[in-house]
Amino acid sequence: MRKIFPNLLTIFRVLAIPAVVSSFYLDYLWAQYLTLVIFVTAAITDFFDGYLARMWGVQSKFGRIFDPAADKLIVLSTLVMLVYTGKVSGLSVILVVAIVCREVLVSCMREFLVAANISVPVSDMGKLKTFIQILAISTLILDCEFTACIGEICLFLAAATAVYSMYLYTRDAMTKIGNNP
Image 1: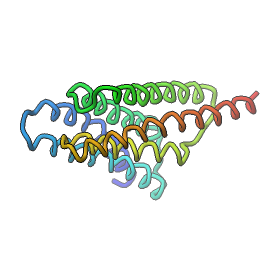
Image 2: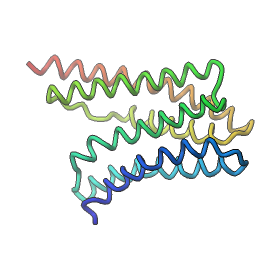
Image 3: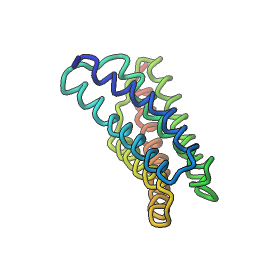
């Protein structure tokens, strides 16, 4: 069971995506809490799948490929739903677009680097970016005046750390490409 448990957490995160998206369509006051619980539970599995895989020595090719994909899919689909439902609007939509563009561009770079047999590890800034994104999304899901203000601030910080972490990732990738004949 230990061998596959981290991968099961990744699969759970992928399966949580339709549940999160669907819960945005529920027209009940408690629906935002359901959305929050599903999203936060999925986000917590993001920490535990990699941690347990390393601790138990059961890292897998599946996990290396699908873990980052699952992370991006749940974050991006939830951000899109926040815009779609109007919980994120106005100029804040630009922040969401910046985050989406960063995730797509870094994913493309990562694929290019894998094809070139070059590894660029996830930085601490990338981990901070993910944490701030999860915090921003969690506060924006709760549709109240107090959390909306905090969510908007966190969304700005998430976009800023997303762009900065993309810069760092690109810089590290270019250095490795330059050192790789």
